[in-house]
Length: 185
Image 1 (cartoon, rainbow, N blue to C red):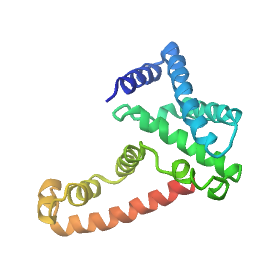
Image 2: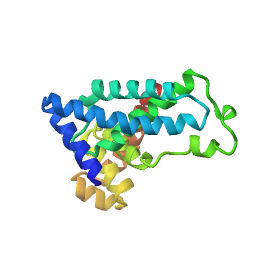
Image 3: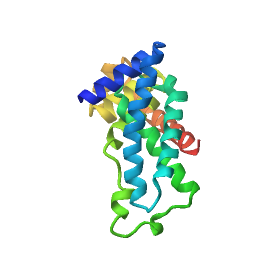
């Protein structure tokens, strides 16, 4: 973890405990980071600093109102970055910005994946996996994530081999449904 991440996370944890000063400090620090992020992204598509400022306010409000969804066991920066990225995507959709509006030499830089996508994805997968029943989650983690055989997974999860197979099949189907619901909201 970087020093910046440690400081921001400490402020977030204090904020969640009810420390109003820490909450203000967190939002101020996030505002400056988000401002730089949005200005850079929007400048590449010929958008104004005022629009970046609007996005900063939207993202800071989202962090404020969604802070109860933050998992203290996870890094803070990917969580904030996911919010910021979704706000940017929503803004670009609302204002009808598309690849056609972006200069060709800038398209990859603007529309490219952000550095935190991997961390966000693992956070999202972990969060969705937690919604599955224990045996389904154990079976999927053992076979699909940890690379164990069906027999090894059965031992680890304390269920039969056919049970592992059924749990994986049903669990992956349930995850696909959960992902479909989240992308629609």
